Length: 186
View: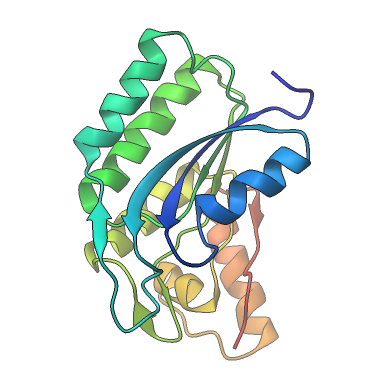
């Protein structure tokens, strides 16, 4: 393990464009982290385009990968888990199960969650994921980085000013994460 740590990065992969694991792995490596990526989806391009093609992984596929790591005692070295775009309910539920297992293996592991759900008033993911993020993911995340739309979805509050953004951060912070950063405001 490097001095910086070892990251399990569970995010999207796109053929075209730089989102998810495609843009997370290299910068983390430049900062001295070892990074093991698991792709939550494999798409032609990100879902902000008018169309996309590809596959959405399901929970049983993630669990098989996590179990393979566990059986070979490879979970022990993780210091961070990072999540981004997740395209199915079963996958997000299995992320929660995986984080629980990782915390049993290393109680000090830091869970960084970018709850990628949409932007500019449009969901990119199934609507059922919103409640899972709000009720189950937010309370166990150490760091949460929603955009304005995602923060609004998680809090149920409209963000129309810097004060409203600050209030949303305080609301999310009170639910569990020690750090909440709204990464963009429109």
